[in-house]
Image (cartoon, rainbow, N blue to C red; front, side, top):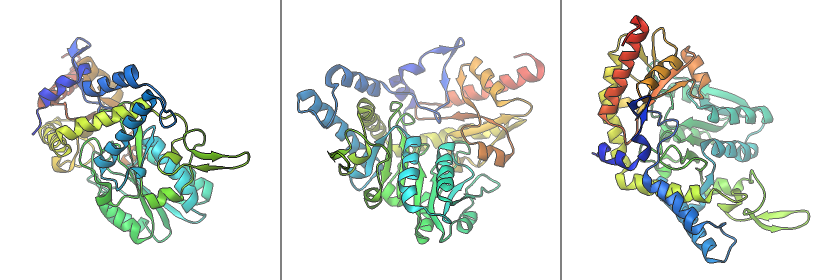
Length: 411
């Protein structure tokens, strides 16, 4: 068990009023708040160690380089990659997936080949594959979703064939809140000599992730969704694949030798990291990993499961409210997308904000999924390690007050 009330004391932003109400922050699937340890680490770097990495011999440069590469090792250990060379720093999940689609995709996919994703993917895990299919004359195929919100593995077995070169799937859906069987998908993909790419943006912050146990070929995630800063993320890739790939960007930092008409690249992981990297972001991501590791990812996962088990039945009991994804709390993460009958999700979210409850509303960068579900948008509450049952109660109270106001014009 974790003490969420004690943990939230480390997040200064949570202690404010919004619209004269105490803030309840339930937009964690979009971005999480940052603990003081991460904020302090950012400040310390800029106040004490600010220098460019890898090329300097002066003391500040050596300290910055040491801390930057130490953060890479923390990432490696956090996801259990085999070696630090397999962990590349990027701007975030979107950049990571684009790198795979552009570099590995252009290398591996030819006309007539197939790329398989699912209907529940975030736009960042759809558009790069659309573009790759268009560039190469390949076919993009979609895995179906079951009526109760799970990835349909029978559909997966039909869609993934010997023509498939890439399967790319979200570990956790940012709308349905369901955990996908990525290890099983890896086995299925590999049986057809395809690679598995995993969008881990909604998984890595919330549960233990072992890329070797999953046998993922590529795995992408973002720092800002796991208590780290914006503008920093990670692409994990198996060494044998990364060695084959060409860099996506060219310039300083990633070169070995530059001649007049050709150049050679540094070894992994640096051949992919052109230009001055987000040094402070990487170091602060390392601090975020320290913070989450000290609490324990299994404990965080258990805490969120307990919150969902508490709040989901209360949501389902509200007349006229629909929750999307699995209805059993045991199969639902802390992401809860819902709608109130007769009320646009933007109106719902605005009304909840007036009660101090921050949720997201819209298509959540998952328009194909919402079209598949035949809905234009949803409201979405998403819980994290600093949320409590009191936050869940505030959400329920705010929804009931919103429903009463729009039905009867009074609260």
